[in-house]
Length: 384
Image (cartoon, rainbow, N blue to C red; front, side):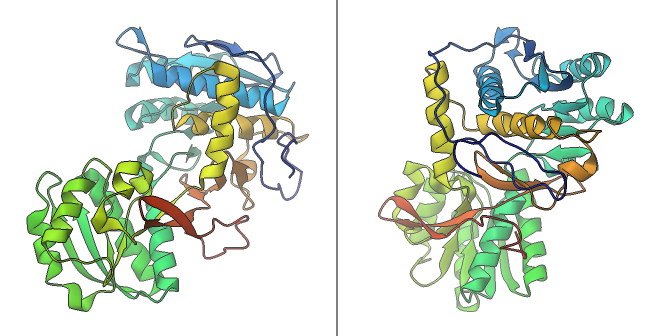
């Protein structure tokens, strides 16, 4: 789909939904952190956001709402009406917002952001037989009819292990933080390895505040491994990188694999991580989205604002389809997927999303693509 076209979905099979790349011509707006409606179309969806927290306006909620308005303008739709609801950053607020949305005729719910809020909204949506596209990163929140559009660590781990295996890496070590994030990552490392026929030869856990002991134990396993995956966050990586150097773990002798969060400048400059690989979304899509956002609202979007943008874009495309119900499981889980601000994605029948991810290499403080993101799911059938 060309850069200036509006999102669309054909009858069978639906092609990828493209996020527009043409600039939005409008004067800068401050944006709104208030509930209300965007559009007046006959097809209603709800957007449940943390517009307030402890009674005060939330910058995150404002950014997500602005992104929804931008998606609505970009789509040029007359079919859709978005009922924006405030969950007050609480599970009770999310439940009440979902109840109000269903009572007002919403055919689908977008949001909320956090796992606890999503669980409560999903109970209401399921009872009303309405699909929900949540923004939580907790894959346990997903189920049939409860889809996650968020950036799930499982997908990034899969892409990294698959890419490393394609480059001849067959014996993996997993150096994993001893926290919930690490637990999810480790489970997926082991699952991906089993699926791809590679081995996880060594697993070591470490406390993020004091990684030296775990790193030291992993150093003893180096003769048995040719790739070392370290799924940790930017805040922890300076200490981990220092421990790698002190422990004699050399990235020129074992391939280090990281986290999708490693694209931050502070991480890219760490000497121990030069040459490391990590999977992430390609940057061009977000850069284009952020430029259009700045042009319309005169401020920078939150990084996760693309979730709201893409969810509304999906809703706008499906609302325009001639068939009903507009938001059936078949329409939402079409195998072609959608092409949003962060690239290709699709929803699995059991709820989590899959994304077309690039693989980057850290070099001289920058990240360079060494494995392009797929342009269609059929071109990369083994996936993630």
